[in-house]
Image 1: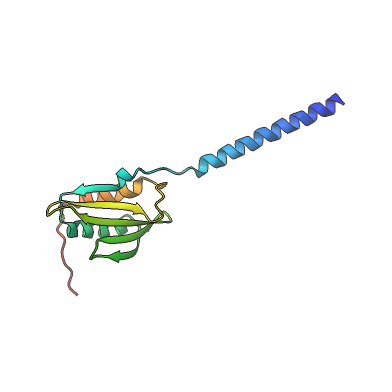
Image 2 (image 1 turned 90 degrees about the vertical axis):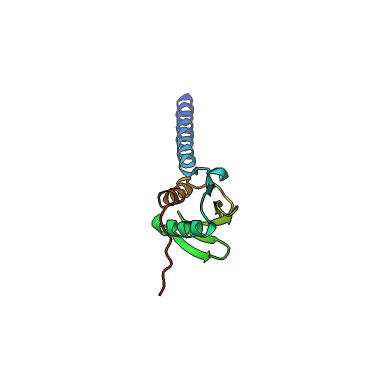
Length: 135
C-alpha cells in the first residue's frame, strides 16, 4: 500500500517539475524587448524635406518594406519584423527637424534595433546631397 502511494507521489512530483520547466521555457521564449518611446525620436539639424528623403532611403537600405508614403506631410508606413511602423518627419524651425518612429499598433514591444538602424543610416548619410531624378 505504501509502495504504491510512494510511486504515485514520485510520479506526481516528477510530472509537476517537468510541467514547470516547460512552462518556464515557453514563457522565456515569448518575452519581447520593450523599446522606450524616447529611443524612437531624434532631432536633426536638417531641413524637413532632406530628412524625409533620407528616412525614405533608410527603409529599403535596412531591408524593410515600404507600405505607404505621403511626401507632402512627411509620412511613411513600413513593415519590419512582421510589424508596421509609422515614420514621421516633422519641422521644428528653418534649420531643425524631428524624425519619429511609432508602431502602428502603439505597442512598443519590439526590437530597439529597428529605430537604431534607421537613425544610424541617417547619421552616416547626413552630409550626402539629395538629388532630384528626372525621367
